Structure formats: C-alpha cells, structure tokens
Image (cartoon, rainbow, N blue to C red; front, side, top):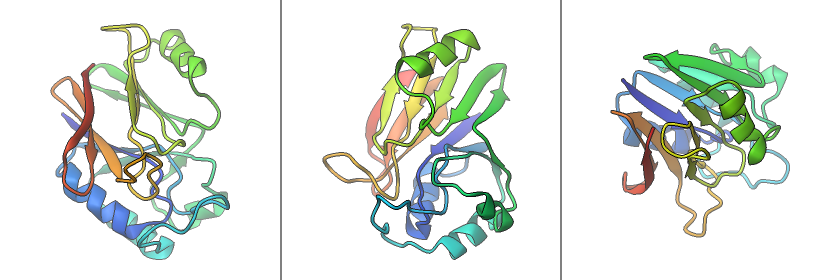
Length: 186
C-alpha cells in the first residue's frame, strides 16, 4: 500500500500538480487541510487558482481523504465533491490507524497524547508548513508527520514538500526534484 500525504495547498494549482507528479501513483491521498484559501496572513502562492484547483481535485481519480484546516470554509464544500472532514479524519489501512488533523487545534504534546490515547499508528498534521517526522514514544509507539506545504513552504530553503508512506517507511520529499528531506520507519 502506497499513501500520499499533502497539506496546505492554499489554492495553488501549480503546487497540487507538482505534488501529484512527485508522489506518483498512490492508493490513498491524505490531505491535512487548508485546501483552497490562502488565508489572510499568507501571500498568494505561486499558481494560485482556487477554482481550477477545486476542479482538479474533483477530477482526481484516486481515493482522497481531507481533514478541515483553519483556512477551509464551509462554502468550499460547495465546489469540492470530496467531503472535508472536521476536525479529524480517521483512516484504517492494513490494520494501522491513521488520524488526519490539520494541527491548529492540537500540536506538540497534545498530538503525542492523541497517539497514546487512541493507540494511533500515525498522526498526519499540517498547519505550520514545516515538514516534520517524530516518534514521541520511540519505535513502535506511533509516528507524527507534517508533510510541510507544497504551496507556501516556511522552511529556510522555501522548497515545497509532501510525504509518501510505503513499505513501513515514511518519507518527506521535495516537490521540485523528489529528493528526500527526512524519513523514518513506522
């Protein structure tokens, strides 16, 4: 099973296309929110075209699960055919429990508490636009991943990122060339 992980597209059709190109064929695409709107504190991302991004998402032929971000509005659901689940989406893949949450309501120790309380194998989060992989309880204790943002990265390099999960490994990748930023076993 190959999973794609994306967050914080913020209306950028360009970032969506680049992300899908680097992820390749995935069985399920997990989106941790902030899909169409860029938010009042962010600049317009390169390739901002919320209307056509919504159309591209609607035309996406694979399985897609979206959790609601702080910039996602109820009206977005009128143009998206995929439900935006809020504030958490739970997916079970091959017996592993994955929670998708944007990250604006829970971060740090709160995310670790979600892993422990619900015996989650993986928590996918977003919001910060900074890619992170952490395993707060060591090997076998659940992994927290933030794929960063393909549209508005807030790393020093300002390179967009996504993540892919396959064969028991989580990898964060740059969208421009597919190079690996970080990885871990889960």
